[in-house]
Length: 189
Figure 1: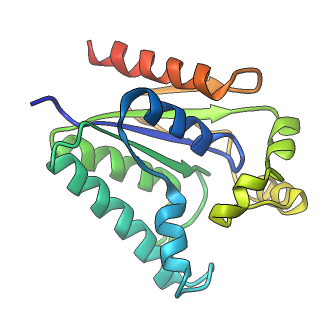
Figure 2: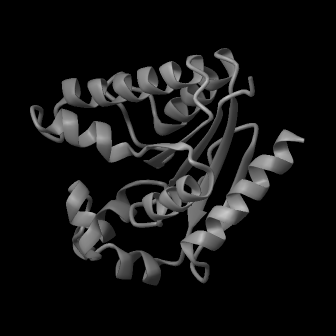
């Protein structure tokens, strides 16, 4: 049986992560684990800033990923906002989170691919108000997006072994998904 292929699509808020992930899933029949599935579940009980909630979100993501790789699911597409200097309740940063998910995949026999989506700020601000973002209680306010972009480092690329950066400013989600799959296949050769 083939190894589970895990593609982690990360970047700033409204960079197009979920839209792109859905296209990857449509082209591959991989499973989708986007960050708001766990976030919304936990936030139904715990407030946004509650350390218990953030700890649970992280734990659920790690455990779901580990279970999927151990079960040899064909593929998993994960999404997540990545800000190098974001702090978790344990004092660690998003770089720690990134290393942990990569480690979970490798330790359980899977293949891991990081994909950072970037786009210009004008595109970020035009996307943040899209109606489909409300379904997942995502950030939809341009002023809050501007504050968030000023608070954290969204420019730094995670230090994954297999990692690529795709600027999707002028690309459709399907074009980005095709680039991601070409990258993952090439890295697998």
